[in-house]
Length: 174
Length: 168
Image (cartoon, rainbow over all chains, first blue to last red; front, top):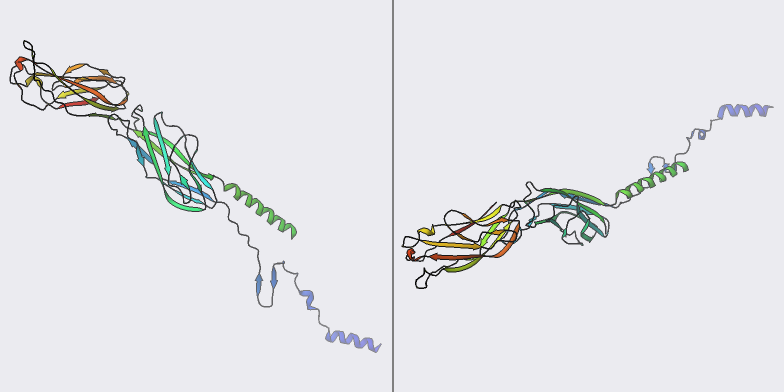
């Protein structure tokens, strides 16, 4: 019996609550807390999507007003417009078309300056898209030339303020 | 935790699919205006020389002839386009006699037009071709004839400018 009293007295004098019961629940896996620093590890996923961007600068007005006697009206060139291009894809092309055909006898041809690595050829524009530049890719270039040539046969009557059409260039897979 | 990871992965896949869809063909456009103005051009190939040197006895001097050609381009479709000709001096006043000379021209009409035949030229413009449609043609003949009578007398070499005009 004295032993029992001694044991109870020891508990009263020396017992300390267990501090481990106060430890908060563990943090998420990624967070490891050290004594005096915080380390955060994170997975970073980087991706580069395919990018195809094309823009055209400025509208164009072309006037046919001269001829050599005995020949049809002189064709007129315009190089005032240009285009900018960015693509990180390979084997691309640019097509071109107009929304509505010009009056019979008027022809509008378009020659693009070819992006690096590609080739370009002049085409008479129509409502059907045609390849203007092909075989290029992985390039970012600006102020690439656009050369229009408008021609008219002698049967085309003077057309006042002219005919306006929308020319659309499309960057796409070759 | 596993559910949260699955949600993140699915969300990523959706975003990736969305981005992949936007990376297709890309276009831009602009306006191109083509204006065709009225075009009326005519050119004469060369000068001509008309020299009267002979006559059949009992008749007036023999006419002198010479040809050149002209080229024309017009896009006027009004149907009233014509070519007129006028001289810088009145032929009737040339020569040292009382009668003067007669300078005629016969212009070959371009396709669709009407030639006026032999027209005596003067300082007042005269039609030599009428009803011209839109056309571009070259090497169309201008046939000149110089006539004089005995009453013309003599005429030293004199340059006469003939001006051709396209009139719409």
